[in-house]
Figure 1 (cartoon, one colour):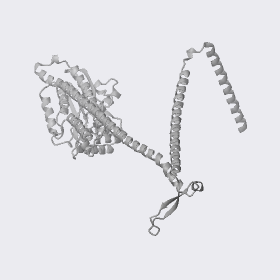
Figure 2 (figure 1 turned 135 degrees about the vertical axis):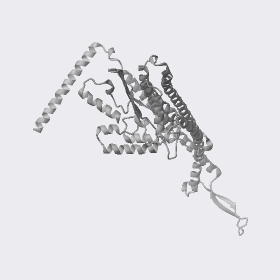
Figure 3 (figure 1 turned 120 degrees about the vertical axis):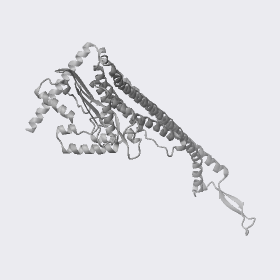
Figure 4 (figure 1 turned 180 degrees about the horizontal axis):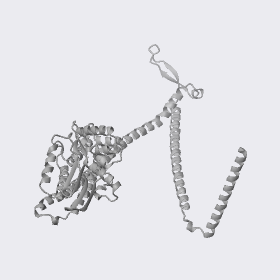
Length: 480
């Protein structure tokens, strides 16, 4: 609330004084953007350094408590709709809201529900990674700070305030006090979160990468292929959120470098050098977090490549199996085709000779066969039949004709396909040749031909316009 009043005071002062204090010229959105401004002034007591800092930091919150507080703040914002109240009542920003501030609320809610740190916990108490702001205002020896520490988080919130008070009381220099406060919030990113309830955020990201590797190994294991599952999108989500974390760390490094660079450590008292070294150690902590985030991102990239390689191997193996199966089916089809080509004419000729056709019956002769009947034991019975040569000749002729027709049809089909391929190739070459001719530079055309082309083009355009005008006038006359 104090900083909202400070911004309102700066806006009011700009109406009265055209050149207010630079500290009150807060540009951009101080709630969502890192900000630093500092100016040296003169007062009756001596030098008066004025500084304003908006410093983002990373921390985990309990997701249930965060949603509860966000709903309460949303209810207050709906009740008090004026601009000043909306600047005061603001929920803490999540990692997705910080990186994509212009996304609609529905997309932000989806990203918040699907955070990497939240997916690693299956119970009701899930963490959520947020990026609140630390606001610092300094005027001379007076330092005012504000940051997100609301009563919904834990009853242990007073411990954090006590730690900060202890840091501030160790020195009287306001610049060191500011540095120690910032260093305290930077170091909190590498400690356990929510007073020991959750591990550091980067540890959760490492666990997510290792867990994904195990899921991929189980998925590739043929003994577990029926039960193992993994989500290929998770590796992309891990890398995307790591990029967001690195962006916040970059903003921290840039914002923290400004107050450190503005102050000369050579003018510090000897007793304050140790505290100043603690302040400068925060720069090393930010670099360490950035290095670790890049390492995890590199591990995730290697895991992603490994996943792609293993999936390609799996696809290749599946393709080989499909090819083998297709080969077996093709062999079976070829065998069935050969049998059909051979036995189909035989079946046709057998059925044909079984029919009572006069032209075929004429070629039959009476064959005397001995009967087995007891009453006529040893007697002969004439039977009409075909000779073996006659049947064999026709069956052989049918086989030869069937094979000849089959081979001819296959040859004609292959010839047609080959001609179609040649025609397509010829058309493609012709189109490329035509395109090459059309892409000839105009500089190769003589100047006289260029001039004649331009004159003819102008005449044709003039004639088209005149015909268009005459047609329009005729239509207008007919309408009248």
